[in-house]
Image (cartoon, rainbow, N blue to C red; front, side, top):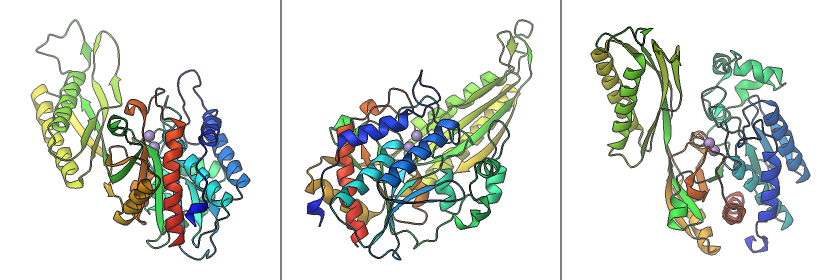
Length: 417
Ligand code: GLV
Ligand code: MN
Ligand code: MN
């Protein structure tokens, strides 16, 4: 049956990616498409339009996840999902997330073109806000599907303007009254496979086209607030000052050291957001807020690292005469990918003669949450220099096409099971 499949069209993939990339609030510097801003809403409409052209049936849930359904011959069976996200971080590239959505569209196009209709339905999914850009929490759509973000949580999440996720959804006309129906039960989805760009650079370095993900590392996000004493830069002697910024720097360096000295398989520690108050040349900062993003393939190790950081931050605060408070914003679980689907992907790489390797995902993905209720796997394609979350992000369309061929065969096999 799979023999009738054509090969993914790199030109079609490029056309879709470039069209989505037109919906951009920062065309002068990379791509910015933040959840439910005008470009993001327009990009959703565009993708839905392309789904319709492919003859997919569109469904949207209360949190705005989009499902483009290609019905199987036994539509009552649990479906197979593929997809990713179309929102971006600030000043991003055009591949992170979008590649997975476009690969899903291309896979279904190929399956339909070959006249194939497997038993199980296939759904191309656009998950709402994988990036934490607007609400400081990532994977909103997949989190809700996993039963970890309900209506009350959507009320409690606020953007920088103080608007709750729930209000934003209601204003846009999403059926917020149906929030309770978003979460999936364990047997509702047969399998989910997400294609994504590699964001570490290992594939390019190893000269491989596909990465079969073993584990998706998960983040803990801490919000650290350091309070010292605001005072005059010239008038306060070096021994008298209680400088919140210098204390925060020492804490950040302590966190970095914990990350560098990790004995876990994969750990990263990042201070990505810093707010200095009052942020003036001649004033000793009285208050600093910074984010600490800790990722690990091992949940217990991540928690131990976070606990060690707390201890060290408190010791630094005492030593420097400042106060520190640490709030856990979230703490996700790393997700192992399903052994059977990984095996299928491997077989398809061999069959299609696509060079592949096993890898780990340092980035989180919607599959990390989807894995809470369905077997998941991920297919990575190379990113130049591993650069991502940057306007320099680049993946060759031909390599996305090669990954899409592996995805298509894998989806077909799963949907035929
Ligand atoms: C998702 O983009 C992440 O930060 O890993
Ligand atoms: Mn990303
Ligand atoms: Mn992504």
